[in-house]
Amino acid sequence: MHYVSVEGLSKSFGIKPLFSSVSFHIEEGDKISLVAKNGSGKSTLLKILSGKETAEKGKVWVHKDVTIALFEQDPVFEDSKSVLDNIFNHDHPVINAIKEYEVAMEEGDGDKLGDAIVKMDEMNAWDFDTKVQQILGKLNIHHLNQLAGTLSGGQRKRVALAKTLIDIGFEHKHVLLIMDEASIHLDVEMVEWLDHYLNQEIVSLLLVTHDRYFLDAVCEEIWEMDGDSLHIYKGDYENFMEKKAARIESESASIDKAKNLYRKELEWMRKQPKARTTKSKSRQDNFYVVENKAKQKMEDERVQLQVKMTRLGGKIAELKRVYKSFGEKVILKGFDYTFKRGERIGIVGKNGAGKSTFLHILQQITPPDSGKVVVGDTIVFGNFSQQGLEIIEDKRVIEYVKDIAEYFPLADGSSLSAGKFLELFLFTPEQQYTYISKLSGGEKRRLHLLAVLFKNPNFLILDEPTNDLDLQTLGVLENFLSDFQGCIIIVSHDRYFMDRLVDHLFVFQGDGDIRDFPGNYSQYRLALKDDEKLTDKGTQLSSEAREEEKPIYVAPSAVKEEPRKLSFKEKREFEQLEKEIADLEQEKTEINVKLGDSSVHFNRLQELSLRIGEINALLEQKELRWLELSE
Image (cartoon, rainbow, N blue to C red; front, top):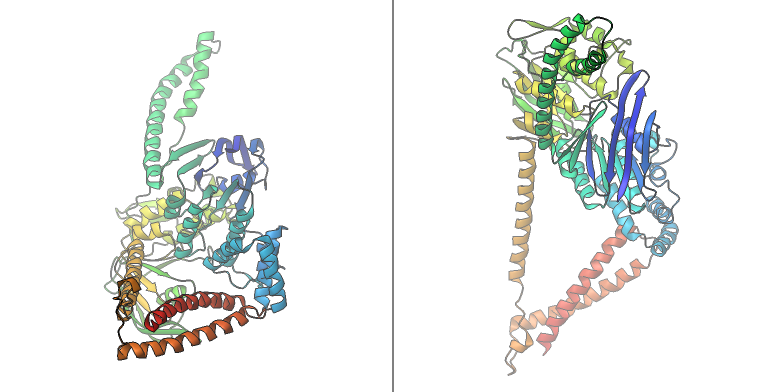
């Protein structure tokens, strides 16, 4: 089924063109990742497709049976309303029934809960409620009565994602889900659950993401938007990079050929008189086509800098028996570590485990409760934090960088001007004279990163450096860091980025417990899964051992018909069975009474229902054995 058609779409931001003459089609079942530089209009294009913005030129056609669901980078909420009201804001009978049920559960009102359960039964809403509970649980959304206006940035993103996934669950069969950086502010477990969820759902997908593992997990093709061109690549991210490199090489050769022809034609043009024949007029028209081709610039997104790093002395940094707590929350508990030259450490752990506090203690911004932090005299920290740029007054990009330094020193003794350094990080000469306030969020992050590196540090601390950076900028950053000779600490949920750059991990496991894992993030995840398998196997072996201890029941047909007396052990077992059966019957009666009580909390009702099933199975087993012994 044909979902969406776009023809000749153009849009500008003021005098700056975002994209022009873009055309494409989306079919049912397509799972597409859209790739483009920051500031090239990815988010704007997605809003145009969803009807939230209009294009200046071109046409957008959406099939009448198709519903478009948009997850935006900056979600909009009614801040005066609760999380629950913002998530369930559709006037739909099933949604209304689930909303009433959730309110009753949150308030613990037995009468309301009873009425809500009846309505849930009437609407057959339990299956969908199970999906809702899964979404809310996996995204760590529990306080549904909290006002939306009090949510942090990360919480707002998770609530918006939950709302989007719940919305598409009860919408029409044909849904195009458009997601703009859905994985930002999600920890790795959430991202892995999300890619599994999207693969299970019958949904067509258009996705903007910088998470390359997430991209590979859910998308089957990549679209690269480059000005008025849209290049389509089937396959995964690695295939995209290979095919893109081949395309750039081909286009570069074509431009070189046009340059050679341009030089010849330029000489001819200069010799021609003003009055030209029809034949020479045709050649003149062709000259301008060749000129445009010859003057195209191929942007090399690879950066290879031989950095003249600030000298590293013999001592880097050392933490000795460091303790840190906030009230009852323990961050560090006797932490010891001596940093070595060229170390590349990744830091992982759940939000709130103390990763940022640890980085502040290392940089001596936050003092420890006890212990010593010794930093070498030659160490220059470069801190790329989540807070972003600190700007006292609005400036042009080039002015901001020149205030730090006019030139960036290189290892061969030469230097790079501020403007050339900006170009390496994908700021064109025109963009360098743009005011910082006019930059997109991703461009500001890129400038912040560049400003940190331009100060020539020898110990880089990067706290979520990949947020809001496009794939091109990430490639630039990764190439730069691969050649960096100093120490690096990275806090990131981007698995691909961590795998490429770190040698070992500090795993913040909570309660001040920090594990030093020798490997990258993917290796750590594999180790966790192996540990889980061993735990499951141990549980299974323990269960099997208990089974072996149970008496072996012999089918009546296999027993000789001649009567025999019960052994002493069997007599004891027979007496015990009578008591156990009576106790189970009594427990079953008590649970049935509680199940009929509307004041019992829903979670407790679920537990009781499970216990009833267990009791019935035990009764059947014990009664069968009792009959065997009684005969």
